[in-house]
Image 1 (spheres, rainbow, N blue to C red):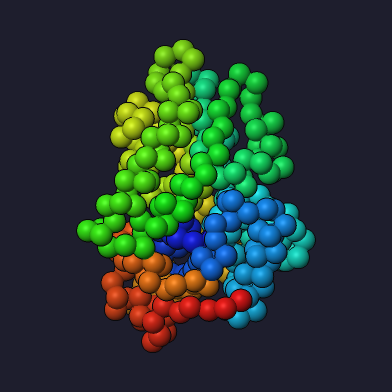
Image 2 (tube, one colour; image 1 turned 60 degrees about the vertical axis):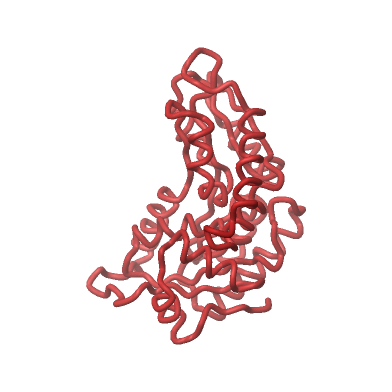
Length: 284
């Protein structure tokens, strides 16, 4: 699986819970981030480069594109390139939001690359006519969350303040929020990075607004595809240690800090998961 950075760790967290016997290779393409503020052609090229690397060098039996922007830009062409490989992308949970809303008003926070994509337009067009959707491109938010993740909690006050400032700005732009007629009662997180700001967003929105993300549905779909392909690892082969191989095309320190902070993998587990090596920085 891969993402432009650390946001996909929110999906990895759900995958590890759903598929505890599987070995995961997580690649953060931080050397070429952020995807969300790049053009579709660039993101599609990087997606195919990373997919080819994971298939050829790591023998991937399934590929999870844990990035909304990459899914929007390249999932169709990936399916053409790898017709027999189970492929799972992430998309804003608009259909579940349409089913969950009581006011008929939902909102989406996503990157500019996602909200301007043809794939996203199709998702919007498929919404029931009685559901109104407010859309916000959240420039800078993924990068702020990435920067916050790169620091130890005691050193991240400035980055946390920037994340809060951006969340407050975009929440205000999407309002009004609440349970009354005309108010928005459901927020869709259209970027895997934003899950790591969910607590902040919930505080800004209040307890009556529900927030939807994609990690658990993606994990369930991955399980279904692996089972259908007959390559689901049986539970009696549970690894003794967290079997996660971590790779990055940028600095290794931010990813290592984020994994410790949000997945709770100890240094020993992370080293064992990488087969005796420390988290690896690669060039592709």
